[in-house]
Length: 454
Image 1 (spheres, rainbow, N blue to C red):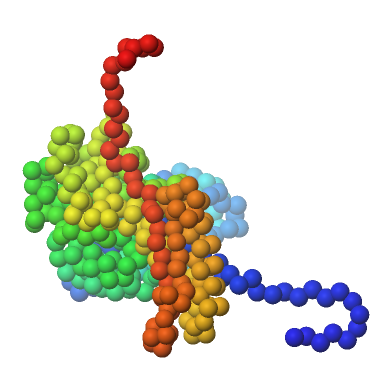
Image 2: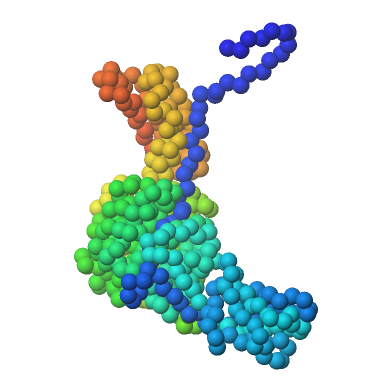
């Protein structure tokens, strides 16, 4: 204790005894793309659509360097044309400087300057993970929409993610689906990833590895696409659907979107858009809300339409259908793969809520390790976890009109007897009453004779 030598009022700060648990993020995605390249070079180059007549500024007779809107660009002779006014200027060069491309005149020009040039893109290496906080970041690292199938599929997925409400994602590409481990291994070290998707990769071995990755880590959830040519009669076949798992969801069919590369509609796998919907629902309603009955932003149609009768045979198996309902493309399913077979974890939001609770409590109670295993520690743990679950209950994630009906936390001498303490363990038992989605809304209507009738 401090020693006080002169009279006065002294204010001391003391610990409250509660170390607040902060809820972890649930909407950060990890995307894996498959982009086939020739040869052994890990990088690939894309020639983007040529830019014609871009106005880069007006010369004042002093300035020699002008920035272009794209980076990098092709600098070889004949790949660009520069005009000052209506006259072509040949005493000019293009250079790719640090994160920008410029034209540089030998003599400072006067007049309006326009440029025709060819943008290019050179990727990051296969297996190198990049964080993207908007689609502009993705284009900087991985390129824009293009005529390369794998790259275009990945671009549509990431664009759909941000367009539907996503805010942060990690992106990596592999040269072949059999190299999926080179993407999953670095993902293991990124603790904040909560959703994993490999757009367009429908091979059962690949989906199995992603499913195992999520199951083993226990803090993330996989979104799988159906095969492009799957239909209602074949999508539930064993070779077309991943094995049952409550750490993954499966969506059918593909969606139609506008493709800037071909300037027309194109079918794309929906997993990127679905990941964005997960993020949107998490932000607007909470992770406990099922990511269903939500509009797929950017979807113009479906590769095939599904009727209610057709969905009746798919929903119990955990095949989440995307349907055209009154002109809106909506997600119309919220089950994990296997559906009814997964018991208490047959709904996506229940599994993701438990991931959230487990990861939040894990990260928020690290301070307990090596503390004296005594009733004082047990009480502090109870207060900390109770305070966190009280917040979760108030958000609407737990069922019950009072906290006592919604959850319990037990950590006392009964579940921590001497033999447990001698083993260096402290046991905390937690029970939560989760809110399940109203998947089937049933109105029972009958005739009524009015007042006075029996």
